[in-house]
Length: 279
Length: 277
Image 1 (cartoon, each protein chain N blue to C red):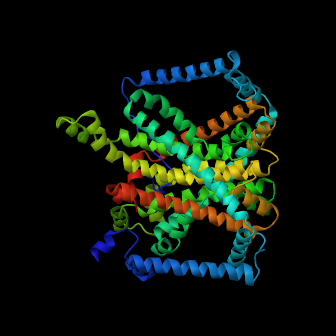
Image 2: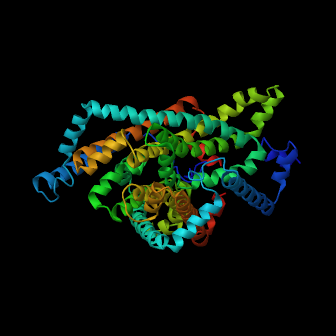
Image 3: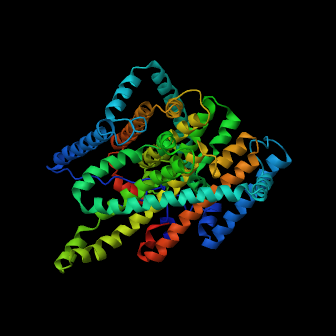
């Protein structure tokens, strides 16, 4: 297993664990350690008062804030607002990314002319453009959707491109022999062979898109989870702020889990390791 | 011709594609350079001369160059770039200092791997921007949160790559080493180290990109100094030419540092050369 993915820079594939009878033991160990850390934290803050609770609230307070948060309609409004922008931006990025990626991967002319620019754009920290987006598109949804799109589209393009390039020539030849051509060839041979690559690009794109959404809300927002978090931290309501961070951690991990499950479902013949080793 | 066809399903159909594919590395670089020039000229024409796009939103290359000169001559650039540089290097050094030893520990000890691994993955999967407001509340408005964000962005790719490198060391080589009576230290020195180093450098390259993103995010959202602050100040006063100039510098830094990591890798660990394209 190598850790450089199709797009090289940003992804590590978790080594697939061999299921052994002892695995359950480790889960208990993990739970134990986490519980111990939380206990020490609680003790240090609320009983021994080594750290001021205003600075780092104890776990019990954070859990209370978390539960309170889930009961507030304001939170759910912000949640819907953020998720909506994220989904629209991501959907646009997936459509454009897969189409452009397939085109560039398939056509040698485009691959030699456009692809180097795409790589360059991929590796630039595009978050720096965020203030300009806010400036041009305003404080509303548009600027956030555009940011999500911009940040998410490049990993999708490049992974799809890499996938299209590595489609086995013998598959294509076999398709041609059986008289499959043109769009149908693309749909029947190229697209399924590229799909797992696209999905790993989408996985990366989703994480970056999340950054775009939250950054957009930080910089100039009227709603959304990022705005709530910024506000809570600004008011120094640390328990609420940490609870919101936990919400984001859950969202991010759930999204990743969902996409990798999807990849396993849609392309079970592909192994993570195979994709990763392919380029 | 047969090897040519074998190079990919899409090649060998003649025409311009085949011509491009047949070029030498130098020829490709020339074509690319020509493209860059054409793009810049087009950009300049569309925005600067023909005025199809509002130059405030998307300034032409000449204006960006002017913006760079303004930033440079006013001394804004030097002071802020220095602040960013300091934050980036400090954060990155902290990430390396934590990431490598912890990664090695994870690779060596199974219990540590099973406990730290899932926690590290969970934190790493979340975009670091989520931690920015906490950093701001804890470390104030100065360089502190920037360093924190750079460090937390960079530490996980290093840590997880080193651990993965240790874990995926070819077991047959380890067995061969034991058979030939290698001591524990020798085993680490001659078996684990060479197979982990390529992973380490792959992690460092990822870390450079993520650290730069972390730096920009932290500076954009709550710092009075640094390149991110320059960008946002320029954008808010509609001096987009300066903003683009500052962005270009950040890009140069990110790409440049990635190259530095690759160069160091070639120098320190020449056996990993094949792995990169």
